[in-house]
Amino acid sequence: MVDAPRAVKTGSVRAAPDNKVRFGGENGMNESQRRRPVVYQGDLAGLVERANWIAESGPRRILGITGAPGSGKSKLAAALVAALGERAAFVPMDGFHLANSELIRLDRRDRKGAIDTFDGAGYVALIQRLHRADESVVYAPEFRREIEEAIAGAIAVPREVRLVVTEGNYILANQAPWTELGQLIDQVWYVDPGEDMRIARLVGRHIAYGKDPAAARAWALGSDQRNAELIAATQIKADLEIRSLDLIPDRPV
Image (tube, rainbow, N blue to C red; front, side, top):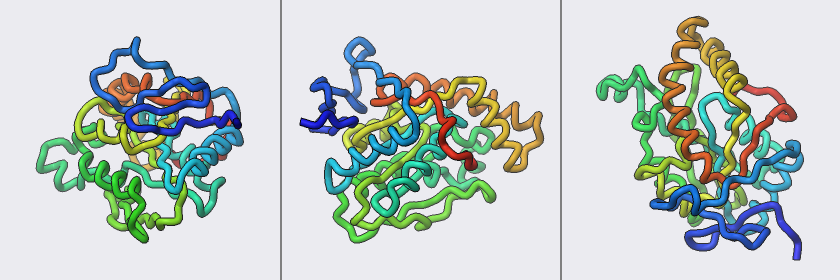
């Protein structure tokens, strides 16, 4: 038997290569009942190999990548999909940002990115469709940072795609409707490059998209940091923890 570097979900638990069970997305479990995520210490090629194992384990698999804002989730997801080619598709959670007009109506525009500024139910419904893989093509929305809005139907996922890589802040969140993702996503990887690097990258991203340095730092240490603390509490539910993305080519994150 080949000791595959992956975990395959069976019902409400995941069977890992060491024959232990992995819990993903269940409610009511304390930390002593969960095994902590495996810390990954290899390079990008090893992560591509793991993603390939997941892709080959069934006709349609879903890999989730999560972590705090600025951790490099999209950088990793894009690198994996580029390496796997047409067998994989990248579907970010960011496409489910509520429109700015709706955030203004709800008085939430000044904390865009918080969990209640997303259409969580819409994202879960999309992942359910991608999980079933019974349509010739599924279209997903895409968030465009240059206009700070999502564009409907911008990402096509044909039925032939073996692996959907989805990334987002709240994939492991402990509140409805996000908890439903635990039964749909086959593995979740948590990206944690360390706080200093994460915040520096996050500030740089805000500056690149138009904020002045003071405003960029204030946003990163204010609204973004509150979101980061919520996300950090979900880390224990991940299957894999990735602490370095140094070997992945630079791209906007």
